[in-house]
Image (cartoon, rainbow, N blue to C red):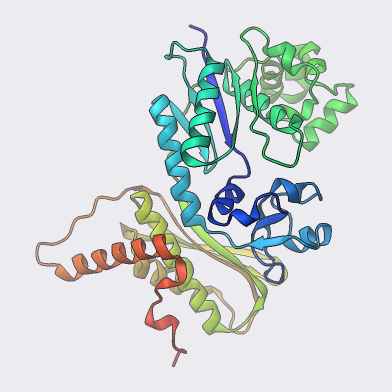
Amino acid sequence: MTRKILHLDLDAFFCAVEEQRDPSLRGRAFAVGGRPEERGVVASCSYAARQYGVRSAMPMSQALRLCPDLIIVPSRHGVYGEVSRRVMAVLHDLTPIVEQVSIDEAFLDVSGRREPAEELARGLQAVIRDELGLPCSLGVATNKLVAKIANNIGKARAEGPGPPNAITVVPPGEEAAFLAPLDVRELWGVGPRTAERLAQMGIHTIGDLAAWPADDLTRRFGKHGADLARRARGEDDRPLETEHEAKSISKETTFATDVSDGRVLRETLLELSMGVGRRLRRAGLSGPTVKLKLRWADFTTLTRQTTLPQPTDQDSVIYETALALFEATWERGRPVRLLGVGVTGLDETVYQLPLWDTGSVEERRLLEALDALRDRFGEGVVKRGSQLRDDV
C-alpha cells in the first residue's frame, strides 16, 4: 500500500494565538519574545514583521533595528501549550498515527484512510481554521522526508503579508523529480559544512546529488554519504514515532546583566526549580537526577548533578538539591551570566505515600492547586513567602 503522509506546520503559531487575544495585532509588525534590554530573542514574529527581515531566534535588539516600530508581546507559554494540545486532539481525530515534532509541528500517517491525501489535508486545514481560528500549512507525500520539504517549499513560495496557508502535494512516484531542482541545502542532513564540501564537488542541487555515484558518496562521507544518496532520490521508509521518551526537563535564564548578588541568584534558582517541577507534574513525569548549569561572565559553562534515592517532581526537593550544587560551585561574588536547573532520567510518575503521611498528601494537593492557578493566570499569580522577603 502506498503511504500517505501529511506534515503540518502551524503558521507563526505564537503570533496567531496572540492575534486571537488582541485582534488589533492583525496585519501589524509584532514579535513574541523577551525585551531587548533583557537580552531577549524573537520566539515568533508576524508575517508583517518578516517583511522587514525580522526572523525567529534573532536578538530582539536586532529586530528593533530592522523594524523600529516593532511591537513586542511577551510570551505566554502556558497558553501556547494548551492551544497546541487542542490542535493535536484534532489530528488524533483524523488518525491515531501522529508524531508530534514540536509545539506547532506534526506528521500524520493517513494511509488507512480511503480519501485522497490532498483531500484529507484540505479538510484538516479547514477544521483547524474554522474550529480553532489558526492558519496552518501542509506538505503531502509518500514519506516524511518529502512531506516536510514540500511544506517548507510551499510556505516559502507563498506570497503576500499574511500566513501562507499552503498545501503542497508531491504525487507518488514524483518524489525525485520534485526534489531535483531544489538547493541541496533543503535536504535533511546537509548543513553548512556538508554543503560546502558538496559545492566543491560541483553538487549544488538535490538532483546533482542524486546523479552522483552512491558508492563515491559513501567513500567520501561514510554512512552519511549513503543516507544522502537515498534521500536525494526521495527515499525514506521511516515510520512515524508516536511516542517520544522525554530524557530531561530543564529551565534556564540568561541575565540581562551579569549577576553577582547571592540573594538574586538563589531566588532565580528557586523560580527555575518551581518551573521544572511544574513541567514535570504537567507531563506526569519524575526523575532522580537534578542538574545545575552555571555560566560565568567569560562564557565558561559548568554543569553539576546529584542523583537522589527516589525520583521527584517536587519543587522543594529540586530546589534544595540544586541549591546544594550551587553553593558547592559558585565562587562568592563571581558574576554569573546564565543559571539553569534540570531533572533527568525521567519516567512516568508513580506516586506512593506511607499510610499516615498526610503532610505529603497536602503538599501534593497544594502544588496541583498552584499549577492550576498559574496555568490560568500566569506564572506571577502566586509566589512563595521566601520570594517576597530578603534573606536574613
